[in-house]
Image 1 (cartoon, helix red, strand yellow):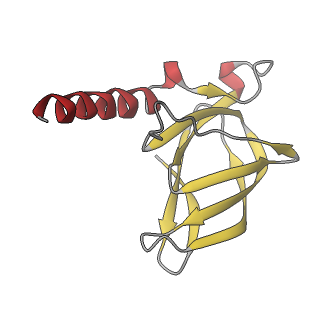
Image 2 (cartoon, helix red, strand yellow; image 1 turned 90 degrees about the horizontal axis):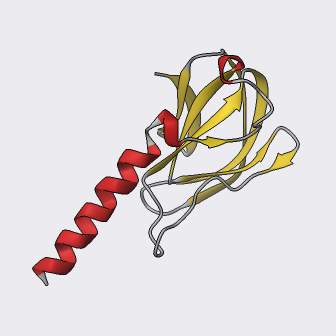
Image 3 (cartoon, rainbow, N blue to C red; image 1 turned 45 degrees about the horizontal axis):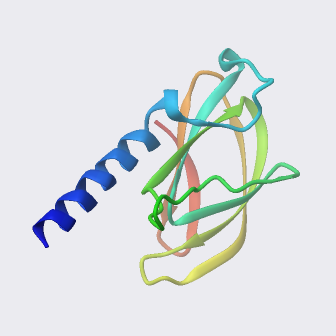
Length: 123
């Protein structure tokens, strides 16, 4: 039993480390140079479904485990995200829309706000 717990703990640490490392970030549009991009950290309680007019699926699971967060490199500029948010009581708030002007070279995170909504915060 201790061995299974140890393996699970190590796997969680590896997943968390990979999710916050810009070198391991998913890339939304490889044709956009990194200097014209920024990073967005998406926690696992947020499911971004649309980035502007493109359907996306940014969370991957490994052995059925979804990392606590996923980092995505996105183009700088004004963008609209359509997402679903699940709060601590597992109530789902679907079809939330966020519009934000992302600056090149910056790092952002989607954070939860009491009352069933989320916002984007610069780190």
